[in-house]
Length: 282
Image 1 (cartoon, rainbow, N blue to C red):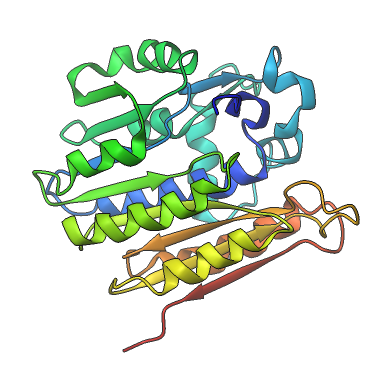
Image 2 (image 1 turned 180 degrees about the vertical axis):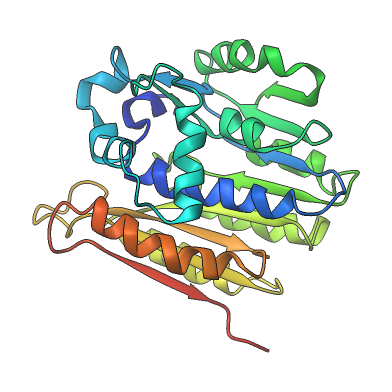
């Protein structure tokens, strides 16, 4: 199925969690001189206009990035993420929200490279156009990111951050994520992997989280942000989770400061909250 369009959800609470964490990961990667790759299995269109088109229909960004836009009291790591989004809106008005490829490119260094996959026939040419200024640092392929990931691991520099965030519009995506991670760790055991999971009133998200915890990796970290209590009718996403395999050792400390702030600022009712946990110490 190719009906999913991320433009409807650009800048919402799930994007805030995902992209704030992605910026933090890349900041940690930048602390070492050696170059690295950023791999994105479901890259989307790259950038989204919020005041017109799909994004304006439900205006989900109003409950996400818009709530942080004018804040001056954010924790440092969260402020850094918001400043990066502001760089795409130089007039100070929240009009554009960059997707993960453009966010990653803005956070990375000149010597680092991007490897991006997008299957949607409409989003792919938009992504290619948005990344054209990046030049040869970015390789963009029209295809299935799960399959494409196999061809890139291990990356030549032996350092990489991989983002896996399928739409989960088909239940098979949960299984595909788990299988992809099992294969990825066999090919590149030391890579950093960030997996986004929607929190829904069905068993698949929790099962995937537990399956990822059980992978033969050195460490894992879970960051869940819920913005409201589950609806009585069982419909919709009440939050999302980022699972990080092989997280930088100080990421947990960073999220201890930012997750409480996000849970407070993005809360829609008293059901809002967060979960932060990591693998037990050996």
